Image (cartoon, rainbow, N blue to C red; front, side):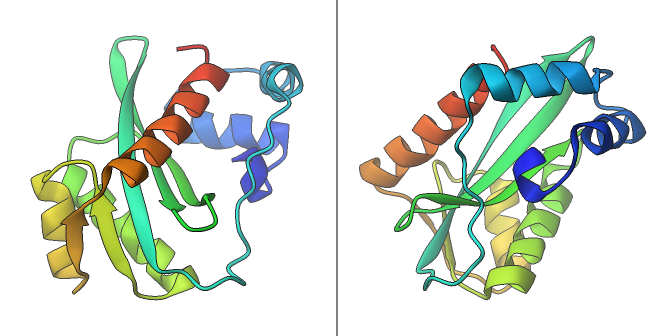
Length: 153
């Protein structure tokens, strides 16, 4: 959220408003300083060939929250980052993919497994979906591990 342009205080407000987690703006600042985060969210100037999408579930108190990440494997940049609390994975997958399509255009999508929510969302948005290669799987898993490390999970 910070790299999408939100201030520490606005991140806190967003997380509180979405009823995801209560945290102080100081904690967010410390996370960023401690890990010297250098994630770049691309401005979309480069040609995109495909999107690689993945999600992870995190336990926040007694609830699960989901972090969704879409990267472009050629330039290895995060194109979309969302934190959602949901029970309907298809709806969220479709919304997130739709947002990326609005920003960067229509491209094929790859995921690490044949989850029905990715297949349904791609079908609904008329996108080509396929399982990604070992290289792309490694790339998205490293990105997700980096996010887990930042959050100390």
